Image 1: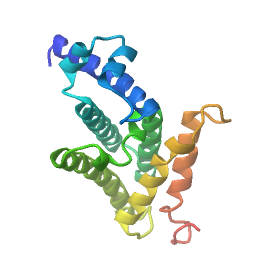
Image 2: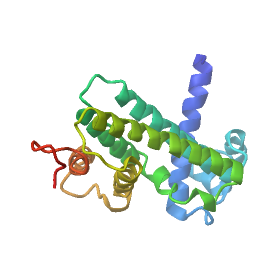
Image 3: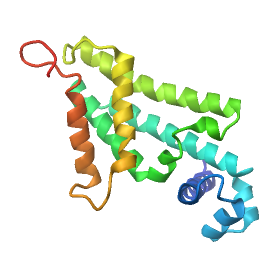
Image 4: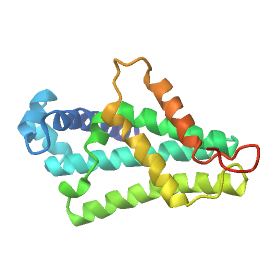
Length: 203
């Protein structure tokens, strides 16, 4: 990718983040492209240069966030860490990322409300790919005898569900910052999997 292409991609990502914050604030149905352009201090034509319409803007935001999530956890998978530490790190990275991109993730709860079937299929494929990254870490821990024997899909969904819900209750005015919250949640969730010294799962 050339320097010009990288600058264009970065500009588009910045527009996506700001535009989705407007959608999150006013609601998808209650926001027009004109309002988005006004909030971004751009002309409507400039916004349409990057996105066909409001649906396309939201779809590209979903795709960007999911691709970013996959890239983040794959980076953790490549680290030379014990599997327990690797899964803990993946959870911390996930929570910090969704809090950093909070507006975008809050709009991702029910994509079927907004998108066409081909778009929904792509979003679900990205979600599935991301879930499999966590499946691999859980399976690796089971094979290394670091985690108890569990239904991987159920546990993965419990972990992802608990982490994703943090956007609904976390407050920056609370006693703990994002990093501390992410670390605490990761530690609690690891107890679902970690075996105790007697060979069983922790209670």
